[in-house]
Image 1 (spheres, one colour):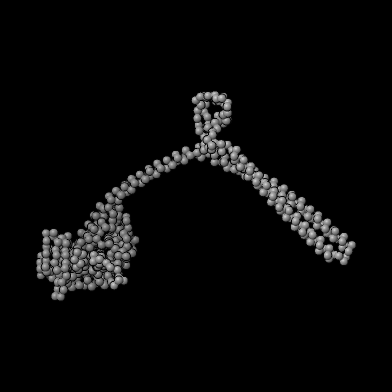
Image 2: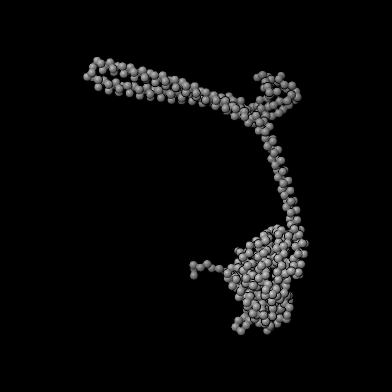
Length: 468
């Protein structure tokens, strides 16, 4: 028991309620029974039990639904109801929320409807994941309905008022009778091949017998397999058919089908105006921001004094060029020194060879010993010369490097920029340095160089001080 997660009663009841309400088999279920324990409070809702010989079930029919009931309802009345199985959370009790009610007497049709509905639901024809989305702004609409019917007139009038930009292509078909389903399928097939954005399948209200052609199994399967989104508006709000369940969107009436599939031109215009105003506001703000950004960069020292971009780099380039020249000079001297030492080494080798030849002539017996000694001495002497040469090169390089570092440090110490960083400044008039109060007159314009830029000033007067 400890391995299972403990849940509250409310959570369990909520889970059961969600599971039941999301089950398509328990949605729009048709039930036949006898009314008992009927209560009709002041709120207008009906609370009663629906029972048969063996079972009883709590039912509720809200005022918005029971106002469509056109016969007297009392205890003992046998009815056929349509509703959704749910759970009343406060008591955790099972109940049937009824959306439509009719007197019993046509139970065979309801039974056929219920069996076929369960069959198609089990095959996944009502799966919401299969529903195709409707286009946001459809301009090419197909209409499948009866010719010269009130539903057709309502649709055309509503389309003209709501979305006059839409082009309506009609595919007339009979919407009542035993021979209607194959003709409706033919009309839908032609509409599906017509490349329309959405198809409206509508019919006005009527009895269950009048609407029964829309419960045809072949028609339901064809709507499920269509490529174009289908919106149904069949009968009234309380009427449900298999075509409604397999369609992509179900509306309560033909007019509702138009309102579901097509936008309102006035709402679209208002939305466009709103978007236009928001776009203008955003663009205006962006222009102000970009203008401020431009002004900021325009006042940047780099823009006001562009020559500063290359002055520092030019100075650095000159310094590097001088270092390179010194390095090349040092390298040339080292190369000359190396060649000189190599020449000496070659001369010594030649001299050693000549001595060796002479000794070979004088004493043939001591040839082997003398030759080995001479070669050993020559190799030792060559190694000493080579090490001395390398040491000399390293010493010269280190001396030059230290001298270069001292020169750079001295140059940096005497740099005018260092003086400026200590708080001093240089006053210039017409590009010439001001060295005396006699170099300026009142009202003269001066450019004062400080460590991080220039200050433009005007001479208001001069005052002579003691030279000390």
